[in-house]
Amino acid sequence: MSETVGGPSRPIRVLSWSERTEPESLYPAGINGVVAQILAEAGHDFETRVTDLADPDQGVSEADLEWADVLVWFSHLKHRQVEDATLERILRHVQQRGMGFLPLHSSLDSRPFQELLGHPGRIAGWREDEKPSHVWVVQKDHPVAAGLGDGFVIPAEEMYAEPFNIPPPDELVFISSFAGGEVFRSGCCWYRGAGRMFFFQPGHETYPVYYQAEVRRAVMNGVRWCSGR
Image 1 (tube, one colour):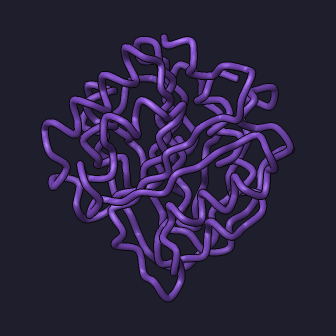
Image 2: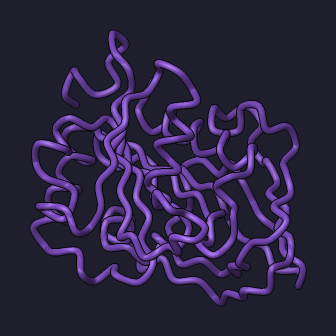
């Protein structure tokens, strides 16, 4: 791991990335922009750059990745547009340099997530019914769960269903339940080489999930954990 990643003497540097297919009516700055806002509200602990797929080097240049302690990633429709060279850069910075990786929601279909796990990340099903999701905290002493008590309810969220084709998480923080009785491992941590990865399921792009206080807290906690701080 580079001694700059997770170093205590400066803010945690976060590269907040999106493919930018989320609706502008709900997320005018993009989900990547909302993540930057979440971290800005945390004060001086974080420094953020916002990039997207249309930027040079697909928004994840060598210089950006070298700068970053954590890469936050939102993708939905353009997973396969991520080029081999882009994927290689991300994998190298996570596994060899120790950069953290935080894929959100539908990013379970992204190339970096699948390659880092060595599994396809497929789920049994999904449903967009605008019904609540209950996010249960199952490891209360985990840093990602800090300040979240027993859990919280998201008023409207897309249902994801098990089985979820992933290797067992090294640490499982959240499990979500849905109106139809489905459950899903919604907050999963892994160690990959020198780096850390936290997958967070909440966040369907047509619902205002990332404006909810508990979700914002979980994202902030996840970024901090991924940084190794």
